[in-house]
Length: 186
Image (tube, rainbow, N blue to C red; front, side, top):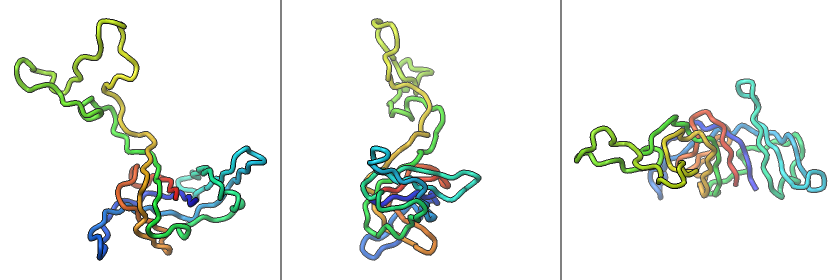
């Protein structure tokens, strides 16, 4: 298993002879340091905890489970060199927060008709319940805070590597805003 933490740098377009224009997200992955190694004998599971360098007085740490964790020791470095072009990875991060949104944007409701007695309820949710149980059912799709939660995108392809600048280029969009830490699992 290949794991690394990196900082999302933004998106760009790369050109390939066979595939043409590729929309790529660039992630800067400074070498991560192994801070903790968990073993089955001691902890009941095998895992490795990676830490990034301090950014803004904060060290980001993430624990990755897997059987290959036992081959690493505390203090080892994990870098971009572990990945290869063509690898299929899973990228996780905190998605963009969009604040308080209505039901049309948050859940894709169609809204009310624009005529025949509908004056001020174009983007209203409509009925939210029946006369019986006399309360709104839990989980009802209503207006509220949107985004800002952990998201994972599977089956993303590594299409660019720059070992000198510690960059990984992943085909497609990655969750999160520019500058936020993301996890890459191979």
